[in-house]
Image (cartoon, rainbow, N blue to C red):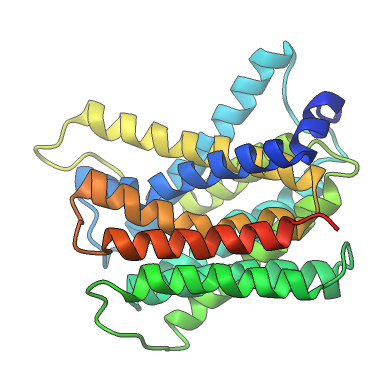
Length: 316
């Protein structure tokens, strides 16, 4: 498939393009935290109903893939479908980015606290940078990258440990699975960087969602999961929310993939520390969870995360 326009790649490689692209993606991903909770209510999905949760996630990602395919087909005035050489890359990405990451995450999340899982998820930034430096060898590790990741992680710790958390724990079949999901996510980021040299990253991101979403939906339904608006809930509101959640993944990951293609993986990955901060802020606004984090600590967290981002992205 054709590569994205050179002008777009050049813009995303600039500091303003990097910041705008990553912030847009992280803001969308942050909105997913409260939207998932709202969605569980609209569809009547209990936190212990793992099969329905997986089916719900599969439906969301299948919609994401459809939105990318249809939207890009209209924009480019031709079918936005993989050719033969694209399919192996799209399938490999779907295994790590969607299937393994979210199956492990949702199963692990059902057996551990949300706070612990959020902190473990933030560790994926470290894993992305380490894999890029030592496994994929697409860039080298520096003291600035290590310091930036540590500061960003400190900001995430403050976000997650300052409210009514109930303490931390670690179980192999709970937090251990969540940690493995972060490894899968880190693998997908580095694979996306590698594949973007010869493939359209937006094409791969859209179709890996379609493949992974279909697998997760089938697995969830086969395990007894169901997706239907809850009694008393507005079907229109439930469907609209599900479509919006599909848009979140489609838009955010497409922009994120294109930004990774134009930059070092570490420059993009460090922005992932912003996700939980946006999640906390938007949860306070949309769900009324105002007791989770004080405004003063929110500012401290944001300063630490921004400092980490600046240090990692500082040009020599």
